[in-house]
Length: 460
Ligand SMILES: N[C@@H](CCC(=O)N[C@@H](CS)C(=O)NCC(=O)O)C(=O)O
Image (cartoon, rainbow, N blue to C red; front, side, top):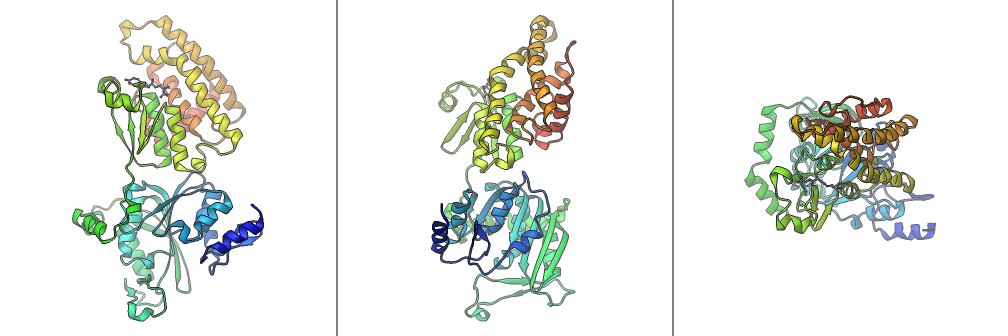
């Protein structure tokens, strides 16, 4: 696209709030330059973090976050064409996970959980700011960045907020409701389940960085009684029906959790923070031979992933699908650069075509066969065949690292699940060679919560 077309696109948007360089040499004509606010957050390492931006407006922060390596989801009650967001996407070539919805009536389960939630310039637009913070807490598993208008001089000792009645608004912004003082903001954050780490204020604006606080049963009961009663949820749905914000049905993963190929997806889902439900299928659970299952997966194998109309089988295809669904490079899990992506794909294919058949009898013989029935010659041959494979990866890791393609990707997930079947105490037999670089890589994988939860448990 040339600059003239870019200018026309920017001009086609009737109102810009953010003023920033949206295209080389082209700034948006907004009234608010948000760069100074980004500088308050830019210092952290955003790579791979799942971030929710509430009220992204023209998308300045979403853009900076994506450029810094975060996986960004946006929530706004306005369509992205009603702001400059859609133009920002076209001019930058980026595509965001943009959800239409109202924070106060949202079912948090439809979005999953986020390492960081950004709520900038939103709180004073909410008729119920405490509820807004409660929903933020439900969506947050790490930090919250909050910026808001506030009342700097209002009875500083008290926890108090000024309400802006319509009669005082005149030609002003009728979406403004509450201007809390500092103490009120801190108290609301605390009661919603956050603790404040940092604050900064200027004029009538305040910026707070908070993190989720430890569990407090009384606090939790207070919030649940206030907001999570069924009748209140039903009231909220009728009060503000938002068809586009209807919770998306979660992903369904079919497959028993002790299957190596199901583990891959469970770990990947955890890395991406995507909501899902798992249904047992395979081996003692059956299911896979039923006509209903065969209609989803004609091979009768596990895993199968169902996402609305979309059905995916073959675990590595499922891994790729999850990354595509997460958007962008899925926080680095599936790189966009063609060369890097192809190499990740290469390792995935190698796992399927070469490693998996080589190691099969080692796992089956040692884990799923009673000792008296083991064919040790077959098991040893499988150990040697898989050692020949692992040696290749060991050499590759020794020359690079820390992960298979430098940064952590789905290649590490797929091969990490099989590495569990090489390093596990359950499969140790005499003569297994030591691969130092492979062992160091495996130790790094063990630090990841998704591995600890789904891959580390005893093999069965
Ligand atoms: N290449 C396929 C292999 C699928 C496969 O063979 N899955 C095994 C479990 S790891 C299975 O379905 N076993 C039969 C069963 O559990 O009933 C994939 O990666 O998804």
